[in-house]
Length: 432
Image (cartoon, rainbow, N blue to C red; front, side, top):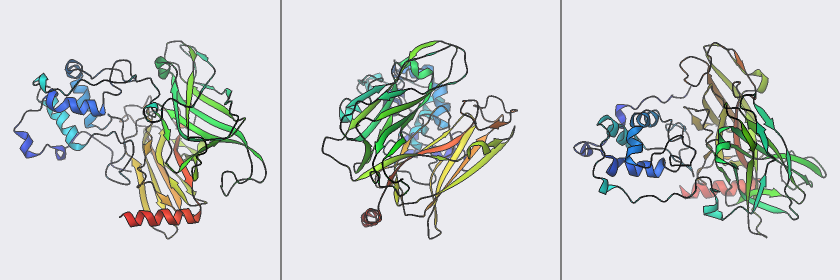
């Protein structure tokens, strides 16, 4: 099992030269919070408290120390000791940043000279379309039908169908999903969207495609708390055809407060008309728990594995583990056709309420030859030592409900032909 993250160790000490100076909020801590925390910890955003002012941070100082020392916050739970460490969306704290915050709290959380504060930030609306800063407003917004959720009820899975209204083929470069109202985030556990459309033979270029015209229901986008959306590599995208539809799966859970008219928006950003990316990306769910075989005895840590053979050369764009409250760790390993093994990524401190999508930097995204075996391993902690475990005396199996368990990985797979794969591998070797 990969190393589980604990409290901060002596190895995170500040450099000797810095020890002679006191650590203050204004000079040392505020810049860290503004860079890594306040996007969520501001009024009206998704975090439960604001950390914008000194008074805010001082009030929650001990909680901040505990969360950052255990690497629970900011939500970035990748194992920093193994595998690929270069990501497009890395929001983790460095060892030095954690040490600074811990020392600040241990020294009584002094304010320092508030004139040393960096300029006050101007935060955009946290409930805006996040990718609009890069692409402008979404080119197409599709809204799910409203659903009324009772204050106390079993989990619900709402599966309406929406027309896209497209009259011409368009290539997608980014997708974003968000609950329409901020309060709806409290009850929307996750959202799946499936793209239904008529496709002719050969349009996807995948080896397993059936002959003739077919109706496809491929995964288009998955969203859960901790994820914004997906931006595809510059050479890849998803294709939407005229007459296509979106089939939703909105998982809702009651919180003791009735929610009326819960809706979810799907924002789609197209490539400019006439731009056709070289490759098509497919969102795949790799099941690690083997479905009904998942078996977690009371008061034990259970391990499950599953294996997949890549039927074509491919580039993996991301790593996004998905488990529930007893999920603890997950790894992804490549076993290459020549027998060589490589641990690609590991999450060693999984937090069930943060489904982080770890998006590889383009120069670091794994390039896998045909015949590579992807080996996934998951651990579930069904003991009292797991603070998220509702009842360690229960025998737990697979299920869709939050109180049940599952283990799978969402990965955007960009399939390549052999010539493309050979060229990308050669270009990467030349850059080393």
